[in-house]
Amino acid sequence: MAADQRGHRIERRSISDGEMLSRFAVRGYPPEVMDIAIHLYRASRAGECRPAKCQASGPTLAQVLGRRPQRMRCLIANALRA
Image (tube, rainbow, N blue to C red; front, top):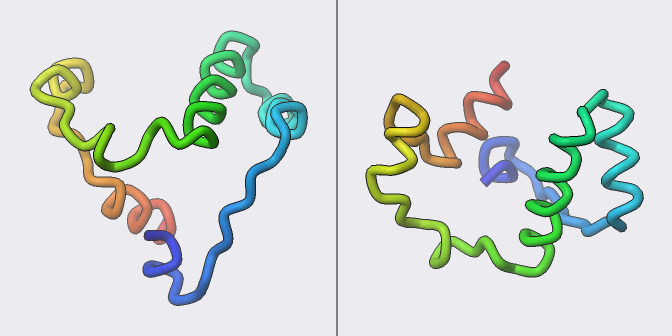
């Protein structure tokens, strides 16, 4: 999706947990956030969040967010414009 927005190829590359944790630390993530983030990173790397598995959220996500969920394509487009 980001490649479509940028108009060029973007390569996905997995890095070690240690390198990812170092990147989080440099950005000042608190330990609690780092713990959650590294688990999400591991799940993504293991293929646990493929579109078929994560597509339907039902009404719960909207209730938690207090708004309708945003499509990832829109989120990326808005982030790249900023």
